Image 1 (cartoon, rainbow, N blue to C red):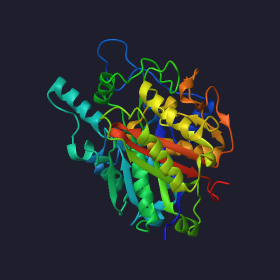
Image 2: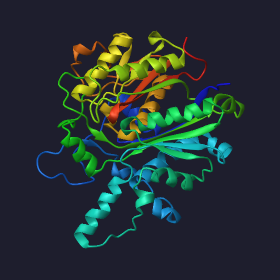
Image 3: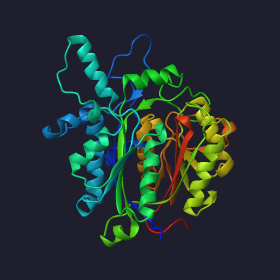
Length: 404
């Protein structure tokens, strides 16, 4: 019999700060940090701003015995996982069976670039570089299993910007089917020179901090982050007396197969994954209290998503894009925005879409701007759309029971 899926642990690191508390405070205050890149030099012209994790947060290297796995991504991932495991208490209970599902895109590219720059300048590198364990997509999963002593299965999902949302769907499916009692879902990505110039070459990067859904939007702002959520079988979680932050009520995924980088202009796949998520959750559009949209700030993505949301939900449901705070964190975005969606439920507020002043009327949606909207929310929809037309939608509900 299908089991309910609950979230018992949350951890997050982003440009807003280290830990759930710092990120919550920034969302409530409408405060973001976006500036010229500090991790690499930008050649020629004015640099587009990015949302880097502040260097003064002091992320410790992995233990010496794990030096071959150490990277910027592994360090921020370890901080997010540690917070999630501490808040959940699941690690000791499920250590031999807890699964790890990771969503990432660029993985350890930043570290590889650092080594290459040093080698090009000096002819050698000051630290060992392990391509398989510090760079490839599965590297951070291996690093976390060894760092935390996880004994269960682990896998990595890389479906562009929907990666960690799809990792969460994979974990939820396995829990519903009775194959897992618990899984840690991690989304992690760091800023790199390759990603920065890659998005700039596509004309998708804004010259100023991103303003999703605004009439004058010019593109996205790249960010970096890690977020971890501990998912459990509801029966098992309640039996061990775990604190339940929220429930994962439903989910949907679809594939446009329209373009490598552009969304289907008709938004067919985007609408399909949202309606699938509602059906899977057993609710209608009227059962959703708020939406944390993909909202990248690019002309086409926002227009297509905005119209799709407007057609399904109309103007009644408040919509936000928390990428206006964190920038687009790529493979980490689904997990980061899942954490923020759960904060909307537990703390009763919808974050504003920072910087957005004039919402495009063609979308027909109600975007929260200016200040956070204080609102009791029992159900929140979170959307993630990636290159190649990989679409995912998640429906989160209050811990006690489903929507009214």
